[in-house]
Image 1 (cartoon, rainbow, N blue to C red):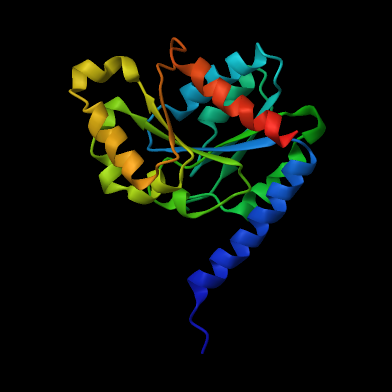
Image 2: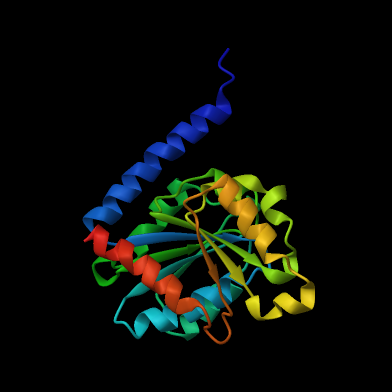
Amino acid sequence: MDIKVVRQIMEWNENCHEELQQHFNDKKILMINIMGSPGAGKTTFILKLIEELKSENLRVGVIEGDIAGKIDAEKMAEKGIPVVQLNTDGACHIEAQSIKNIVPEFDLDDLDILIVENIGNLVCPAEFDIGEHLKVALLSIPEGDDKVEKYPLMFTRSNALVLTKYDMKDYFGFDEERVIKNCKAMNREAEIFKVNSLKGDGLKDFICWIKGFIIKSN
């Protein structure tokens, strides 16, 4: 009796991830997987990021992941951003096959960057590769400075940690050094950025970082 169900699912997902990544490479598209808790500020961060990227003549599309609804996708569409809503109907993460099914909805020849806003969750999304070149974990100041220790896989697997709502640091007694120390202990290569998405503070450094990967992908 074959009971290796989880392993089979993960192997199948990895094959699809590699296929997608090669497709994005061929199209010279940088794919970024944005992850974080509900309320971490993912949508606000993405909207402000795209605003800045557009000013540098970079073309961006968004796959908006949610368990249900299309609230955030509507915010993107109002700004003229190419967006497709992906509802998981209860699943706590996005899998590579779902991305593969959605990609044909975009004109990839008209994009430089494809951003996925993953399901609000610090656990499951970190387990699944979905064709991305970069995994970015968002941690908002109000969430507290213990999350890296409590949810290690998210921060171990991410290429960058973005501290959002950074302007609120003093109000919440957020121990920034604790977070950075714990993140670096798990993932020495992780880049760390401090961002106020409403004003755009800190976004320039993040954009400089991802532009390096756009250059490399070309």
